[in-house]
Image 1: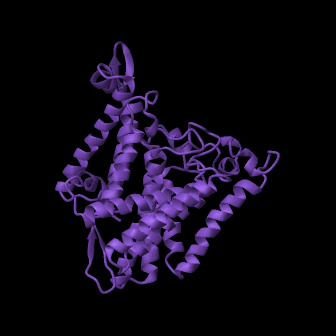
Image 2: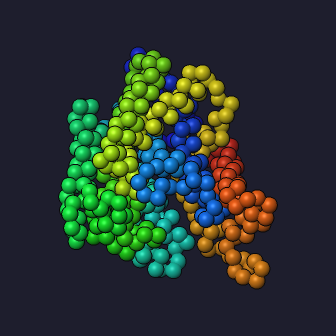
Image 3: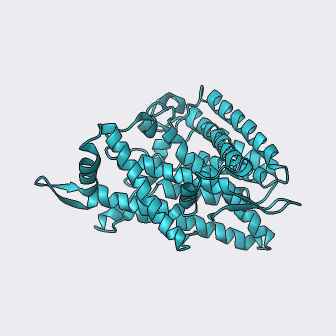
Length: 389
């Protein structure tokens, strides 16, 4: 799922090297680090915050963009393995192994620094990497066999079934239907399922529901499946400009469909609503087509190297930066003006907040964190170290 540039073999055509796929993945990873590591959570520019509940901001499209590219590279990787002659059993074993390792990496991040024991017994079970691993396994297996028509039918069943469950089924312990409680984070059907299955192991900031919870993972599988369909189209033998034109058109239609569905099933990242799936997948298709047009049609590539560096080492970037953030934000404290203070807070105050306005200082720290990890990943790339799950 990683490489300096992803190869796309088309029937009757030479193997393409589409730089844009690694660039797009790198942009999403760098974006994750930017929004996850501000200098101060109380001073953030609105586009770098998640929507309070319904609606979206640029920050809310980062995760679905990553799942979309996971779907694309999943199809390209599995198609490549088939072309090399791997049998179905070997491919399924690889899918299960990769997905399980991604989930385990996510749990390791949650458990870090591995003491005291209560960190394990009270560990959050859902999470970003856990969702990526589960979604990867499900999307890969659901699209491994069968016709495109059958796979589209599965996708429709996932999105429509989730809509039906969240809006037309009653929520246990609540009066009325699920649609009556979509505005209340802790009272939705998804929240009830999270508590029923994972009580005590949910997101610490809510404790009653999880933004990467059990039920909302079902439509997230749909995001990756849409990426798989896009990967099939990218791998087709049609001329690249024709493929890009279709991605622009279909992506725009997806965004429009998501906005229309929003009228009855609001766009919501934490619930990963079906409207959110269509809207963000459509935006991802348009965004990727734009990057493809710039890098692989116009061949304007002078700006791409930093994002490729991020794109070829996504696991190291995400896991390593997450553990570093846990260390400097909460665990490693130093004496500062007579009080134990987190290293992150000291750096933020001394290097940025001492001369910049609060929001600018917070943004400057986040950008410095992204650049620090760019340097780390650059050194690894120079040494040929690319961690592949």
